[in-house]
Amino acid sequence: MTPKRKWLVIILVSVVAIGATVGVGVSAWAQYQQRQNAPSAAETTAPAGAAHGDRIVFRNTASGQGYGHVASVPLAQPDASRAVLDIACDRVAASRDAISCLRTERGIAPSYDARIYDASGVDQQLEWSLPGVPSRTRFSPDGSLIATTSFVTGHAYASIGFSTETVIHRTATERASAASKTGH
Image (cartoon, rainbow, N blue to C red; front, side):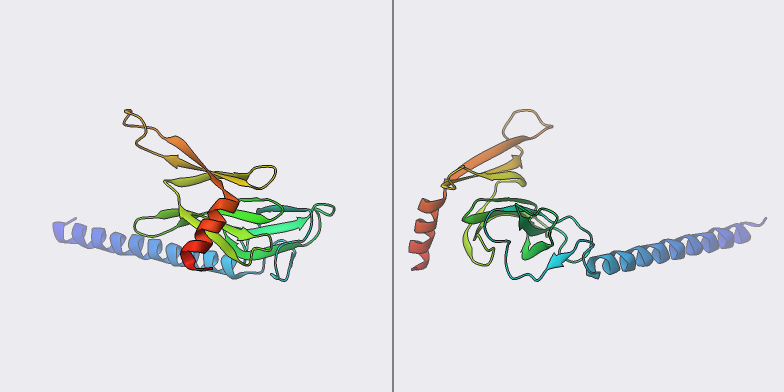
C-alpha cells in the first residue's frame, strides 16, 4: 500500500469514527432531554404547596419532571400522591414550620447555598452561602435551630482528603435579622 493510500484510509476511518461519536452523543442528549421533559414516573399532585399537617418531606428522585425537587406526602398515607414543589435541592429537611434546602448553583465556578422556606415551600425566608458541597441539613426537635453540613477542603495539612463543616443557626434570630436588613 502506498503512503498516499495509507493516509486516505486513516482519514476515512477517522471521519467515520468522529461521525459515529457525534451521532451517539446527539442521540444520548436527545434521550436525556426526553426523559427530563417526560411526566414524572411517580404520581404527583398539583404543585400548590407541600402536604399539610404531619408529613414526610423528601427529595423527589422519580425520573421526569420534578426530579430533584422537594416533595411530600401525608405521614398517615405515605403511598399517597406526592406534592412536588418548585424548589430544587441537593439536600432537604423539614420541621413543622419550615423547609431547609441545600443547593448547588452550577456554573464555571459552582457555588453552594442554604435556603429556608416556610412550611408550604412558597415563601423563602432566609438564605446564606455554604463553604462547600452540601452534605446534610437538620432541624432541632423544636425547630428553633438549623444545622447545615458541607464537605470542605483546606482544614488539614494533608494535600489529599476532605472534612466536613457544620454550622448551626438560630432560625428565629436569623429570620428577625434578615427581616430587619430588608426593612420588613
